[in-house]
Image (tube, rainbow, N blue to C red; front, side):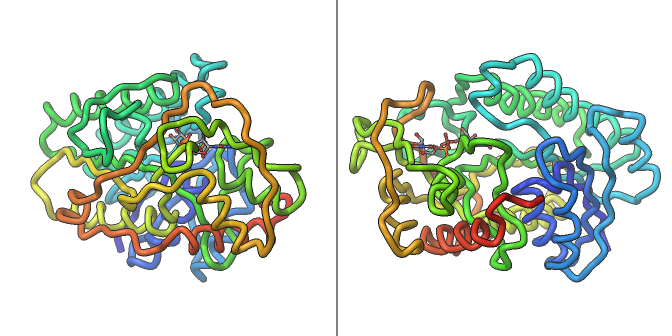
Length: 338
Ligand code: WQD
């Protein structure tokens, strides 16, 4: 059984990917410092998978401790999720983002190199496309970032690209996620942000559960179907499975730098999401149109032909499934995973 190191494996996308890895016959090993997730996620993962999940409470910036993990386990590949990811926070605290996100990636690559581990998947983001010249977005579109969080994603993509140029047997896949929402059908794991949610879906579900008064819609004067922002929402279960398909690809390809958009190829507006959620919730969800959020773009959705052609990846869940599972998770965890 192939051991796969999942850094940030107790986080939202990481934990769902751990489930998918077990389902696909891989053996996930989690490294997480629980700075933005609960250690209780581990027991929930063991309940879902009915399997003991090995984990290390380690900061990926700590090379000495990280190397211990590589020394103790024969690792086939690494999926690197660990990193700070709040756009607004990155603007206020850029050095914290550069230090944590860049150094953790560098230490992971150093440890992989020392222990001859050759397969790396990096959790990148559609944010590297900035404000695209057109939609849908293709992988060869120009890259442009407008905030420190996005810049760390782009800088890491470029570091890894440079490294693969001179290390032909080191294989990297850059996965550019669009907007992951939804949760595992059990409601045991899901999107569980600390404090007031930055992202749309957890904000909506907290309004539905009564923790927040109404949804703030950031502007309705964009050039979109109804004036509100359009995004490519993808079920986190689809996104997780995309990582399994990518690992399978890395094991058999001779190429050593792969880049894929992981989305659905379909855009939904803020009001369309609120409307779909209200069908699940069973009554209207209060919202107010307020001013635009600085840095937001009007429209962002993927062309996913390349991931389909080369990985066989195709999202199978629709917006209703995403809303249903998000709401189920929130109802089962009114105060998050504590
Ligand atoms: C979606 C839409 C908002 C909240 C960011 C990062 C991306 C990734 C996902 C980390 C936009 C609108 C939102 C709210 C709203 N992050 N909105 N009211 O900004 O597309 O992407 O999160 O991995 O890298 O850039 O996601 O959910 O914040 O916003 O109206 O309370 O919802 O304007 O149109 P975003 P989001």
